[in-house]
Amino acid sequence: MDLYNITIDELIEKLPCISLVNPNKTIDKKTNKQNIDKIKLLYKYIHDSDFQPKHLINPIWLENINNVKNKLKEHTKTSESERSYYTAVLSILSRIDKDKYNTLIDTYRELQNNVQKDISKVRQTNLQSNNEKINWIDWIDILNYNDDNWTSRDKLIKALYTSIPPRRLEYGNLILTNDNTFDDDKNYLVLIGNEPYFILLNRYKTYKKYGTYIINLQNKEVDELNYINYKNLLHAIKIYLKDNNIKNGDYLFGKKYESDFCKELNKVWQGTNKNISVDLLRHSFITDFIKNIRHSKVNDAFLKQYSDAMGHSSQMFLQYRKIDVN
Image (tube, rainbow, N blue to C red; front, side):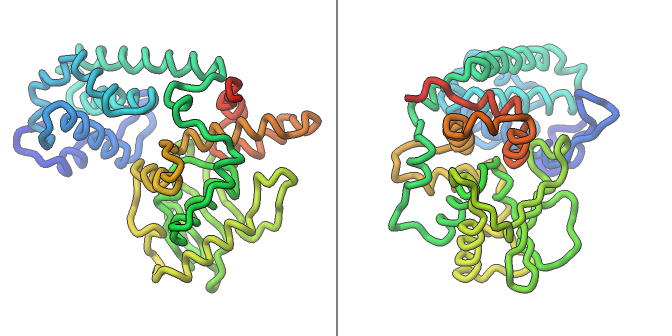
């Protein structure tokens, strides 16, 4: 692959979409784009200039491992985020020329594995990460937090993450539609007439395992502990649509977000002076949920209902609970 005379977009187009784990499977092209975006950021952190594919021809800057690690410690807030950069490097280099970059790929795989071991240790102990200790907010305070300066957009984002069990960042890619045909790689807010009826999630982190997930906005269910309130979510959606001229086929929040939708989340709770990430919201929710539910209700089917709603397994649901919260 000629990296010297190629643009970033051309590089993304040329990258193979074969899974590195299972050659019989493929990955989305957007995964390659997300990994290239990580490499662009990493290069920016190190050189304070823009990345170009030619910078991978002889990537001495990636070989200075201590510098890479220091820059990531400076610019990332979680071990998961740090790991994603190592994953991006080994993924892209493997797809460009596995033989040429073999030593560097092995180095970054080791970095990735070491961080993953640390993440697993923390999860297994059910203890807060260092970042969570600094920014932790109890679920009740997340629910009760309000800001007089909120727009209907802010109120909708809060409702999406508090009126139902909080998912990841897939709401940032919602498309408004009143059609009855859907692309299987897109997420939708579906209207019937002018009434919001359901949210259709086809693409999210674990979609290959759990498939399409549908949130029925006409559901009248409100549980006794107020973890589910579809009426409140539906109201927030209606107000937002009334206040904004969003047309059929438009992105609900104005553009297609990727991981940067987390910035929108953080803005909603910025008055708390905490860095409120989607992971913190999910961990706070689960910690409160496990603490308050009646133990007679805790069975596999009950946990699966809520873990499915959050897009992960029941085992992961329990691992997210934090036992060192006062």
